[in-house]
Image (cartoon, rainbow, N blue to C red; front, side, top):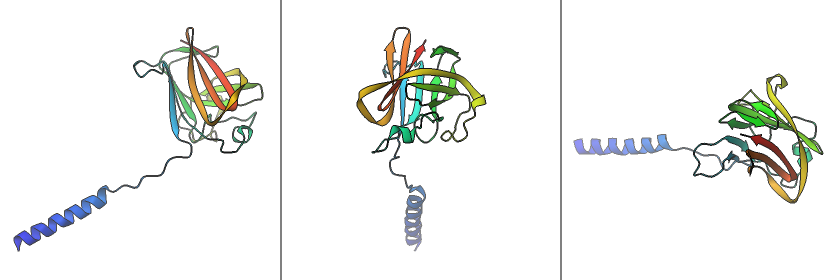
Length: 179
């Protein structure tokens, strides 16, 4: 009888412990989070800059309807993108102290305004507050022959730093970063 009670307790413990540890996970995000860093080599442990953002996809829609000209855009999807500078830099001609900032953009036909904002953890641009802007940089927009379905950020190495290149559809925008 004692063995039977011990066995029953063991079976109950197994059943309840497996139920307690079961976890349901959501499917893949429609706009998955991504990261771009400079230097991008995994062999370099000391990064100068890193951008964490979500990658919306056109899926037959137009860039102008997803990131309308003249309106503040979160620079990606979901939460506003965040950019971290691990050292003081010159960002498009503006001196920026090391730290983490929200990254917003204001698209235009030929020029985009790229905004660094001190308010973090913002969902979209719904609570964007211009008074928290640390810097606004206006850069030229160019057109590429290749269309990107997913919004993308990459760094291109140049003398004394890198260009942070943002691309979506056939639009490309580059912000110079001097280290």
